[in-house]
Amino acid sequence: ACPRGAASHSAVEYWAMRANLEEHVQQQAALREVLEQRQQSLLQLSAQRSFSEAALRTVVGDERRMCQAARAEVSTLRAQQMSWQERAARTSQASSAEVKRLRAELRTEEAACKEERAARKSQGLASEVRRLRAELREEEAACLEARAVRAGEALSPTHARGGHS
Image 1 (cartoon, rainbow, N blue to C red):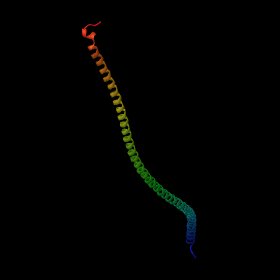
Image 2 (cartoon, rainbow, N blue to C red):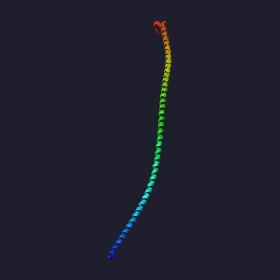
Image 3 (tube, rainbow, N blue to C red):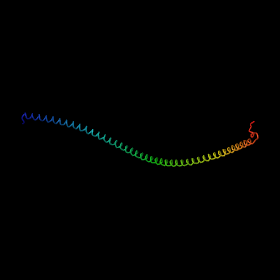
């Protein structure tokens, strides 16, 4: 049989161990609760991550499609630009050729006009020369007539006597 002090010592130990065990069980329960909360948070985060990844994949896919569409549009625009540049170059060449042709035509017209003006001027000068020659002949005839009249007066007897009436 155990001495009374030993039994009481055992009881104290027993109650201390039991208190430790209960505290340990409570800590375990608290830890289990924390662990469950963390597991729940992890599940939520995992779900959010999956959702975010899916959304990101959707966004990335959309971005890729938009980039491909933009590249295709850029290619189309470049092709159109090349086409426009070629057309502009051809139009410019055609315009340049047309300008050269029109300038040559203008020079030909100007030369024809100068020749026509010169011919008209020449005809005008020729008719002016004819008119002036006719006037000159008339003047010469008038002069000759006036000389003849004066010569006739000089021979008349009134003039010969030296007197004026």
